[in-house]
Image 1 (cartoon, rainbow, N blue to C red):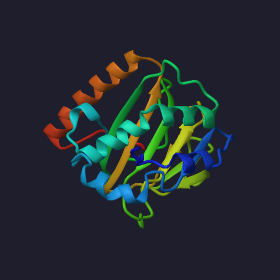
Image 2: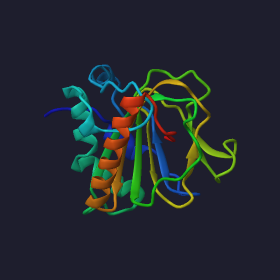
Image 3: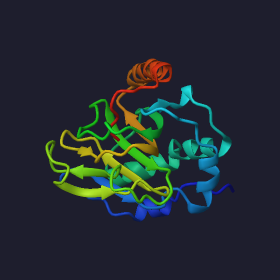
Image 4: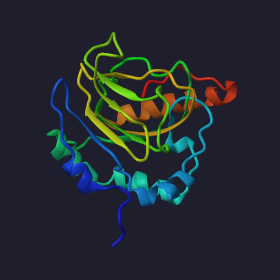
Length: 214
């Protein structure tokens, strides 16, 4: 039996906060022994912004991670942890590799996203910027509920409520993060992938990108 690159036991055991919105953090969700191979196979993303997987090239270890987080075992674990049904909810995955100084603005996710999962694929994070903060409101990055170090396979999952505010202090440089969303329907996936593909084309063309927030 093939060992999954993710630690479902650690995910199940992680405490779930319910106020002001449902979320959980899991250090080393990606197994430490799997990190090197996955990072070696991580897609080359040299511009700021999020890129849908169909626009990227990557190796088998990275593909195995994506298969695991989109697989039935993890889906069932998410349903149990957050008390939601994801039946009929398609998934959408993007990858980021670089943060720009303008990124990290406080926001909530689109209402077409039901659940957001962020998996950070960086080494030990020493910078003060770039640490995602879960917030009590839209106006103050210091009014935080929790701070998520973007390092070493850490996972953050949250239910996309209207008050699920988050953002981070600016950071410029390499910052790898995989984003998985369960969304309302396939129309969202098609629209978002088309939008991301168009955006990715112009990012590569101009070497620029609109602000990113995760």
